[in-house]
Length: 539
Figure 1 (cartoon, one colour):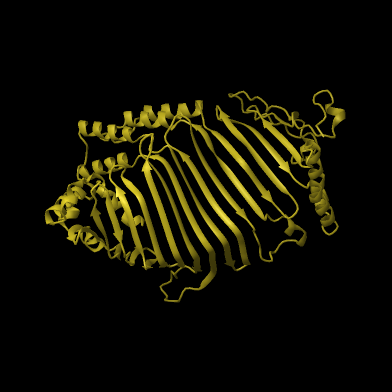
Figure 2 (figure 1 turned 180 degrees about the horizontal axis):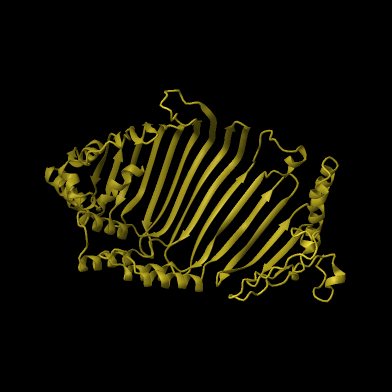
């Protein structure tokens, strides 16, 4: 679907005039319109061709003719077949778009260590939809194929992949704020990928066959991909693309042309209002030399604001139902392996609007450096004065016994971090009990139990039995847990001094890695020494 989408987008400037009659004159007019987006040479050399086909126009993209038009070289060769679609102009100005074939192909790249190749095939594919030039997108489209296969080889790695029963749907409407709102959902079943790692090619001139070093097989019951956009500036991006095609053969842009480019760049802001997407696997299995790893579900999610004064950009990784093979680890530690996990983080308060607008104003493509040193210095200074905030969305790791979660934020005023995070653990005592039992076989574990119990002393027990730690770290290095100071500010060092502020230990027996030996750290049980400086931690 992606391969055909760009050609479909070329219809953006067409009008209902072609709906009056499908003939050679209409095909010529449509080809002239497409030349603004693919270049006149593409039309002249039949890389892109338009001909009448019944009551449709057939648009064909020939990859063979494209490769023929390139300068002769020995680095790359390929055969991608011909991509064609039927476009039928409708009375309301939109276009019916359809295709029943997505050809396979192959490519080969010459590298210093040997050739790298890739081949692919797609069976029983079709695409159909309504393209609306007024929004520069499909108002409705669907795509499906029976199966897809891919195989790649290189001197050190071979990959084979396949998937079946793929389908996709997309909807688009004009956005109230400008641009287009769209949604897209895709899925495929029975995903299978085999990765074989081989020994490097011999360097002594021999022709010995490569040795298989490792094989990993990934399989999944279903793959899902979805995307959503709000206010995506399709028409403005197409206008920019049209500008680049029109000036592709020019080494430099004249002043008026640069002014036109800047106007078009600013018109495309904020690029989109909101853009999000997710990638999901279900029933994922990974066969490795260690044995099989598995996950019931695994997904990745992204959520991006457009270019704004205070944008947010977020990422999340989620997985559950994790299973492991027999691993070369102590038996007692198996219960500490994660069964479910979520990790979410991002940035907020990002002012990209000021940076982008200043970059466009400063840009001069006739200079050796398009952006001036002054602009780069001002941008760096502005970032240091007002850096974005890092946010940690509710994240957790769950094991057979307990769950540890965290959420909060980190700021960087003057590039000095300050954070506020809330940590929470369930079934804390079960962790202690399991470590205590394990220490019967491995006595050294007792050393760690001391620190685990100390962590509980710092925490607050909630009504639901969870242990909570609210950790505040200030920019001066001081830290408190649940409002109780546990570390003072970092020593202030004279910038002109070589003194790092760290004193050498007075006694060879001092343990620098032991927090109970750090005079700057307040230990919960150290009430005699710190009763005047810190309240007892909350229980």
